[in-house]
Image 1 (cartoon, rainbow, N blue to C red):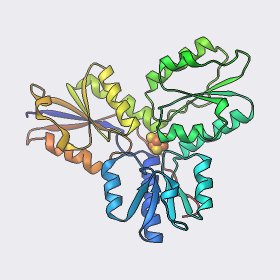
Image 2: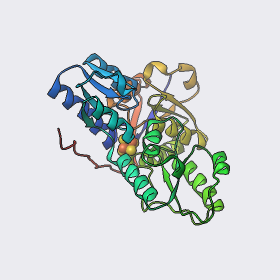
Image 3: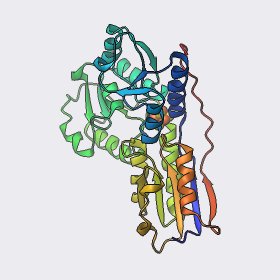
Length: 308
Ligand code: SF4
């Protein structure tokens, strides 16, 4: 391995929603003591999850698994109203770590459905964020669009008003293609005032495009279950660069680096800094130069919920 230069994307790693969700679990643990329950992985990062498990957090998928009267945190990805009702029935103390930018999409879905709009929701099948948004409105007022092909299955009368909403962590470019396809079929379909793909997703994708201009290979630190991390890898590959999504340094195959000396490193919104640092240390020798490429400075912070 002979890496002469490492370009580091900035922004990379934790976004405001992930930092807030992790802080919420931390504060709830200190306030109530273990065990506490978290519905779904609080953020999609294996290292974060293992760290919390060691401290007494029990991650569950079904509310029915939580003993009556326990403390539960709902994950950053958002949850459907049905889950809040189930938690109430079991007399659970609920803390909500839903990212405020996901909550915004929930509110949009509810508002537009109540005004009679049909919702074309661009998102991933079985992703908790998509399930949460879909659960906010009657089934016959929304359809999940996971790919361009799904647009063919939209069978809504042309006279019906339509709104396009999206999951927050998609590829900006792919989503624009799907939106254009929907608008070809339904020219009257509208977008919400602000595109729902979140600032962190957009900024990290812009940054990885800059990284791709200067590097021979890119490593994206993040878990395979992380939507925004997968998209970062996809964006890099679409720029014509070899790119790998890795949980940590142990997943780097030295063969990938044969004949390459200029490496790019970035990280999904749920990847902790220490994993990124470990990757940089692993790739570096005494002569390696590390340079950050900053495309935008982020300063967004979300406050903790009022009940904490
Ligand atoms: S990626 Fe965006 S929507 Fe998801 S938690 Fe971070 S800020 Fe919120």
